[in-house]
Length: 305
Image 1 (cartoon, helix red, strand yellow):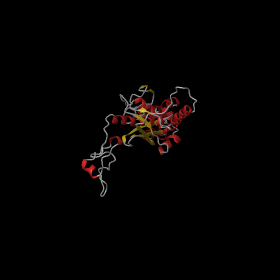
Image 2 (spheres, rainbow, N blue to C red):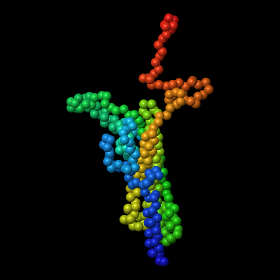
Image 3 (tube, helix red, strand yellow):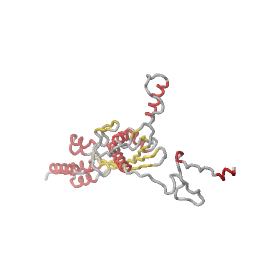
Image 4 (cartoon, helix red, strand yellow):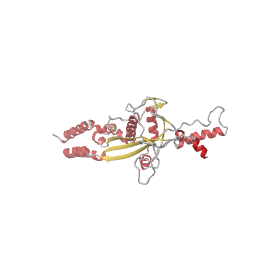
């Protein structure tokens, strides 16, 4: 068999192997792949064009604000290396589309904008009846905090194996896949904290992966390589979005069946059940409105006074 025919057969075989490989799709957790997970829009309790994999709620569980630690190491990578916008923008869309929480603004830019409107009202520059008086802000019941763990590795087993078997120019091109093939992975964590008590009421982790066959353009030409090389455009953004949706779905499934944690025989923060020698005995905690009533003085006590 001539080298030309062998090269054609090698190219066709590689195409079949790669076309049937699931890792070429963006995979969220253990579910099926999706090219874009965060899409569509939301208005109030209604949404349109959202991803079919997004978990939803019949009614909101409360209000939530996004708490993004912009001083964390992962955020520096997100902003400086990947040049992606804040994760809060992505999560706002998912949360509102799910209808599980009502998003309230607590970001620095948004708070400044609201304060500016109130300053204009107080200065007398707004029209009468603008209704920017006090007492209208909605409390944030919960705080939702994101975190990302990045991973990017090279995988060249398929290209190297085919290149070694075939040899020649076709083999060198296939072997080049090992250098141009990258599997990007991301794990996302979400924590949900009750803002009134500071108690964590939910936590979840999600993951996603995507394999980018960068060497396919050399093998099949610019047109075929361009169709498969679409992962090269914004691979990090797609993987991160999928990881966050997986994490958010995990959280929604958990809070749907939420049951408050309690410490037997005492309220939260009353000392705990792991006592230490010489320590104070645990006590029943309470909020001011639920404070125990003091017993009314008896006649004997009044006589002593």
